[in-house]
Each structure stands twice: as structure tokens, then as C-alpha cells.
Amino acid sequence: MFEISWGDGGRVVMAGRFDASQADKAEAFLSAIQASVDVDFHDLQYISSLGLGILLRTQKRLAASGATLRLVRVSRHIREIFRFSGFDRIFPIEEEASEQAR
Amino acid sequence: MVDREAGARRAFARSLAAVSDLLDWADRFFEAAGIPADHRFGIQLGLEELFTNLVKYGAGAHPIEIELVRRDSLLLASLTDQDVEPFDPTAAPDADTTLPLDARKPGGLGLHLVRRVVDRVDYTYENRCSRTTLVKRLG
Image (cartoon, rainbow over all chains, first blue to last red; front, side, top):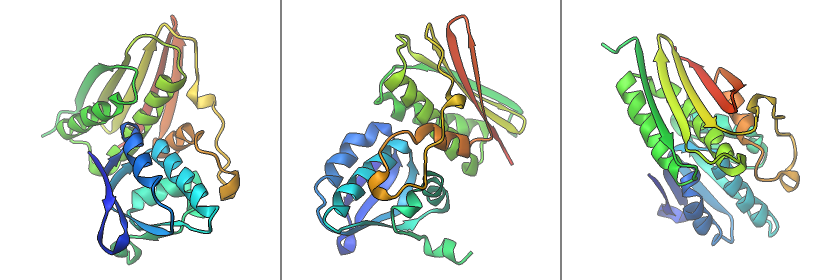
């Protein structure tokens, strides 16, 4: 299961497993975003290259107007996928507070 | 006590919509075979990336057979595609991850990631049958 929705404080919240079968749902939601926003990854368990591609397209579109997606509460294994992809150069990333302390 | 050897095999339709079923099925196998949570993510990501590659770019007409095996401290996942031309995913180039935002393009990352989240990727082609096997060491 994968959910993308508006959470507290104007954050976007992603939860569950963002696999290839969820592309349309994520694309539809993200294409409506026009300004800088935090994306809460706390409950995101999984992301594949397809999800990374959708996030990249969104970041490119926002960058044209000086806006940006910032990823917050990112778990260690998802952070690793962003690093392997070189996407840690493209997205500001804030790790889970509990993992920063380790 | 978990068996030292456990396995499951199933064929999946060539469709991106089948990815959800594939990963649910893998989750159930991991539970039954006692695969630690830390080791599941890499094999699932590998399965999805290789499966979607075959769906998007492979010219095969048959369902794709997936086999999961736990043998002692190894977890193996293989994808078999019958009656196709060869495509060796181990020969695909890595993505250039140093490019800035405006030069990055979506796509081309799948196999790049697979090589980094599993311990080994093997490819064989025989009798027009293409088989990729992912190996993850447990522990």
C-alpha cells in the first residue's frame, strides 16, 4: 500500500511502498505542487527508480521558479538509495532525528 | 526453527500493475523463510527494477517466472524470461550520478541501483531463455 497526502504544517506525507504500480497516484499529486514544500518520509518504507524519477521531474519543474522539495525524516536505507543515485546532491535531505544521534 | 532451505516460484504477467503483487508475494516468502527485515529491501528493489525493465524493454510474450530461494545464509531471487533475445543487465553502464539537477534525466537508474543493493548479479542465456539471478548474503 502507498499513500501520498497533505499532513500537518503544510507538509506532504508519503507512506508505505512507493513501487512502480503507484506511479500515476504519485505523479497526479506531485504535479499540483507549485511552491517549496517539505516531504515527510517517516512512514515511507520503500522507493524504486520509478519513484526517484517522479521526484526528479517534480524537482526540475519547481527549480524553474526557484522552489524546491525538501525531504525530511528520511530513514537510513532510503537515504542510502538517494546517495547511490546521486540524488543527495539534488534534494536537501534531513535524516530521522533518532538516526542522526547514532 | 526456520528450515535451512526454503523456496517459492510464481509467474507474473508482464505489466507494471503486477509489481505490487510481486512485492507482496516476496514479503510473504520473507516472513515464511525468516529473512531479517534489513535484508528484504535490497532483494525487493532488485526484483522490481529487473521486472520493470523486462516489462518496458523486453520483447517477450510469456509471463515472467520468479523464484525465491533461501539456502543457508544466502537469499537468491531469479527472473526467467522464455523465448527472448539476450539482454545482459550486468553489462549495462552505471548512471552518471555527479550531474547537476538540470542535466539529470529520469530513467537509467534501475540497474545502477540493483548493483549496489545486492551482493551479486548473475546472468545466463540458454535455449532462448534469459535468466538473471540476484544474490544477497544474510548476516
